[in-house]
Length: 78
Ligand SMILES: [Zn+2]
Image (cartoon, rainbow, N blue to C red; front, side, top):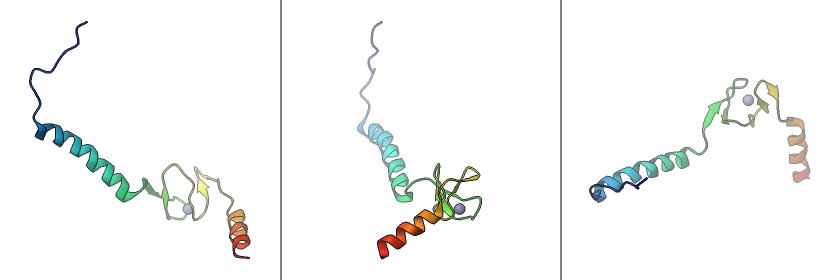
């Protein structure tokens, strides 16, 4: 099968317009950081597809044990 070639040269404005949309999308992602949602238990902002940093809940169960975190913090302080 013969590979198709473009009939006309695409203007620079059209090319830049297309790539500008990609850049804008990337910039929005960077500005907002990761996708953020609300925790259903404590209503705190949390990253999508990850456990809540406030209460450690994810998908209706305790995914992170918050007691260990407190121990770690005290060890660093002491
Ligand atoms: Zn939470």
